[in-house]
Amino acid sequence: MQQAAQGLDRAAWMQAQLRAKDGGLTLTGADTHYAAVHLARSAKVLPYIIAHAEDYNMTPGDLSALPHIPFFDGMRYALQRLHDQSSDAELRWPDLQHLLSDENMNQHLISEGVYLKLRSEVLSMQKDDRQRARVLSAGGHHAGSWLAAFPVSLWTTARGRHYSLALNMRLGRPLPELLSNLGTPKFCGASGCAQQHDVFGFHPSMCRAGNRWGLWTVRHDAFQMSMTHAVRRAGRQAVTCSQGSGNWLGAAAVRRGAKSCAAIGPRKPGC
Image (cartoon, rainbow, N blue to C red; front, side, top):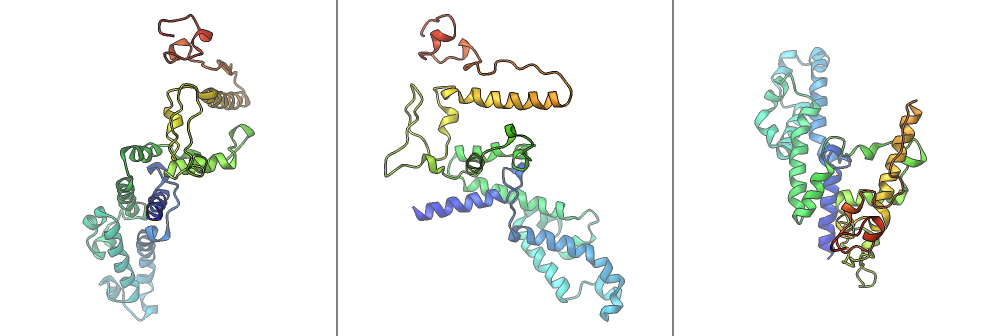
């Protein structure tokens, strides 16, 4: 059990190092960043060193030959590390001479292959297709924008525990609230469901009970209120609709056999 937890922690930490657009938290560790940063910054410093070669008791020609001095040996070590982290880098810059002669070389370009390989490793560490889908769904353009959102009003401020739960779900960590209590599993309390909760919180979003306790409606109303407030502050008119109306999709969205079917609209066959 401890080994499984350690494996889960490692997968979560590796995912956290990914960029937000790749499904991570942009908390890249120093070991992951080291090679790209060292090579890019050293390449930027090299022209200055060549221009002042005489102050180092060398000639510009000596430095252009990339001699075995600590400065270039450090770059060679970093390049070897980069080759381990990125297959693209090994093909594009097989040696230090190729790297320094590439006019388009920069830290962003060097790091791209590192992140691609890291993301591939994160996906391969997931235990099933559902967890892989979780990683993929966390990425994409603006998919991680909420991680850096600055709260500007009470409506857009998340509670600390809610934010922590969102981070755990993004990284595939077990949710403490859904763990078994003294060996007793947790079951869904929605009417007509009663399925056992999984520790990763997948069940509520797939629960066949539908709009459980109006949670979908609450989320919809909170977002609608925030948008309305922003539009009105900008000096425009905005009219809200379907706020607080429970199942605002109407009778067409009611599951067969649901108790609320008669209360929403005309009785249909099978209700």
